Image (tube, rainbow, N blue to C red; front, side, top):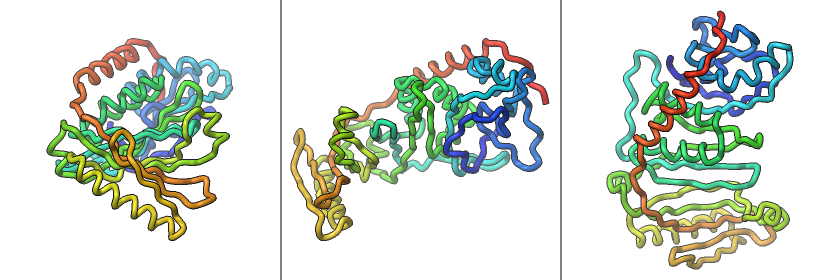
Length: 312
């Protein structure tokens, strides 16, 4: 089974009793494709293969009787977007040897955004993605990531743009794969790295008191360096650029935090401002084999449970 090379919906919730796409891997049939199969018991969930139907059964069995009786399910699905995934017969895509990767994690319901990385080579993004989903308790997200990696391998990871996973409390965690052309860092990792990051903050004191932490609406990594001095010199330039972008009335403060440059830029009377900071970390190589072994255990558990035979 090949993955789609077109954008998938940014969110999907089963609020009706039928689906016109594979409810496991989210494959939307193209013109000329054969018809989807459907669960022979509830006839509401469609699947592109027996494997997808079987892997979905541990979760689907909790809603199957409800759907069979004509009820509705509020079950949420992981969604993702892939761009440029090779079609059948195409030459396999290759990762750029000078590209490093970051994982941006957003939890909009609590106004928290973080960015981890850089990771290199491409396969090293899989363990942190898996850990984020596991720590958040998103079993559905783990299963979908499993399908992406084992269904499409490195090419699927290379095509991945973003991944939205449902959380146990009904909210969504957003994971985005960010790429940066940086040959120096790519060919130096694993090593010490200094990242220049910008946080877009909301200075709402009531919201801050409710959340228990400063509310962040967005975060981005501007650049990474293997030299602290180079990172600080570049960060000073980025600070001045942020001030120029906000206009002549913008106010800039520059200082240090734990010996690393830290500054903020904002407009008088505005609740929104930006914080620029240099962050230091010692990037290590992730245990790819341990991550794969975890996914193999997840697959074994799901495949050992019986499911109704899908019908055409």
